[in-house]
Image 1: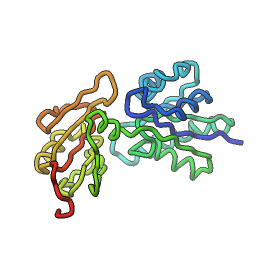
Image 2 (image 1 turned 60 degrees about the horizontal axis):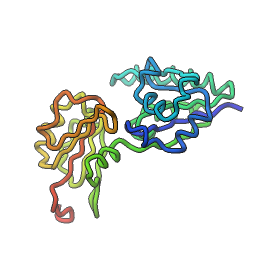
Image 3 (image 1 turned 90 degrees about the horizontal axis):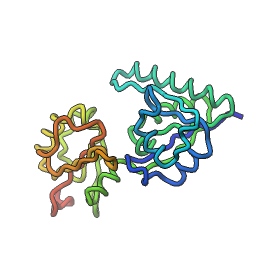
Length: 235
């Protein structure tokens, strides 16, 4: 029988937010796939290794994932990654693919998962704490209340959105278009917060659009809420 491919979320950055299930699966298996050219330089690996130090003794398999928008190049990278994972699965070995946050939210594992399933392999997903939940906790900020909707989107890809709908907006992957995103947020009249590198030693918190630097890092997440007292039923 072939092995099982696991997509394992390690949470947003704080090692204490890793789930017990993720820790157990990492300890029980020996092949650890990590996105990137150098496995030990991956943030996901660093987080996991802080809780499961024996990772250093396991077989690390780097899976290069280019940071480009060219769908053809991405598809080619995904197929190469899948074929490498399948080479272990065919030996009856389980493969753990580490990922930041949760594997089901804007995650490279989703693409690998689809190909693996279509190729007939067993795949299991181990959820992790999503970055926007951790960021809201660090801000002591409720994401939604009562009848508020929440809009989750990758800001770099959604440039037409005016952010005028009622409710809370969570903007991920904003760093490559931060200046444009900030302008959209100013026009929205919403209360804006941001967390960079949530749960890590380099974490920074910003309250208000003008505090957010245009060169905020890749792991920056923005939350935009309606002002207190907004009546959504009347919107």
